[in-house]
Image: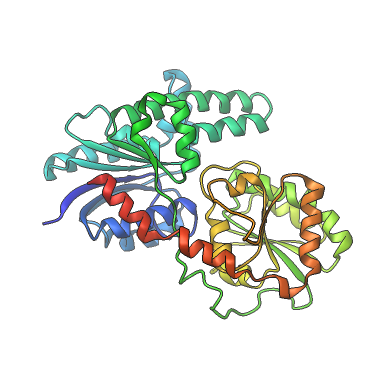
Length: 397
């Protein structure tokens, strides 16, 4: 009989269409073949309720609660009174806590996999449980980066969140059997922040579905045939993505258009903010909004650009583009955790004019220069979900 496992995830692990959900879904899928899964999670997008039954098919039992982002932001302010990280009350839910307590008792659960450190609050200070924590990223350091990009009072709030969340991240690892991150770089960073727990800290890479993201698929052209296209993919309500496309569209792309007026920059992703929608006023910038399938936009792009200036962990958007044999031009932040070398068609550039110059060089090669088999081979050899999930099961035991 399969062993029981409590899996606590901050966002429903389906559909696998953005970074954290891709990772949590592949973990859920693999773990369900080894354990009886008891899933506790949230839905923060009403459209995702249609997928609840799909997720439940992988579970023995589940508790999926609604999370209203606006109400949760208001609720998170209680952290200012308690001295806690605001992220903790944001994800605190009495109904989920009651379910967690009950399901542990009813099914004598002894092992818990926590996905995102904030979900650890549901099982802390329980000596009867073995905790495994997938931090994914060092979220406290992400808030530190945000603080550096903002002015007061946001800078103060973000800096405070960084400090308080780090305290909680340390508390969690002090009680966990193991804590792991999406890359060795993230793990190394956390080891410097919590050196007393160095031996408990490791990494489990993301993988890529290389059959799904394959250059061998044939897709209809989503662009006008006469243009050259630079593509960016991602959830466009995520602040780091918003910052990236604003910087590129406003600071880099105009210089590219001067040399290559037939070039367009496509921002492909759901829930574009007002700031992102406003970028469509810039000549040559196109904001698609949500699309059914990002692969045609990647497959037919001349280049994939990933100009992130704030990032944590491994960027799936980079790996997916590489798996489709596309050349990538990115900032160093976007490539962090991906051990690229000179054999790959991946350029790493952080400054505005050199970034524009490198894009122009690539565009000058024409369509013949926009396929890179080395990029795909690299992903096939280094980012397998099978390898990652085997490592995860080994950690859980």
